[in-house]
Length: 186
Image (tube, rainbow, N blue to C red; front, side, top):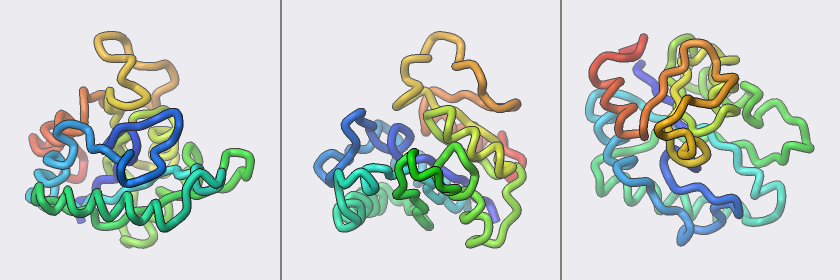
């Protein structure tokens, strides 16, 4: 199975320091939905792994999260794409759970659910904690310079990236890389 794991906020859609709390606030990044569709058309299964501590903080409820995802699914379908599953951690950092990135629990759940070894599975995110979680689970780390990492465009990437991290301008550039045969599982 060709599997790609994506972070959500800052990778697929605009991020906010105030949290993305409603479908109205969920806005796709330019080219991101089309990138997912291109991956799908090439036989890739796309799964989301996302910290959603806004739930644990009481900033929004599961119904609002589901409504955001319904909007994403609708827009993705219009672009010819799909997400196979969404895994999210609802906990705050203070809860010290195993599923909150940078810990690998959420990524490990994906491997178990899909019955695939995670070694070399591309994991794409806009923050160090995304990549650390993926690397700890054996994934191939990919940083996109959108969301939290947009500030690194035109400069050196942040310190502390896992060994072998590939850096891409955005999700579309990542899709170009993968579709050109740039991943172990392609």
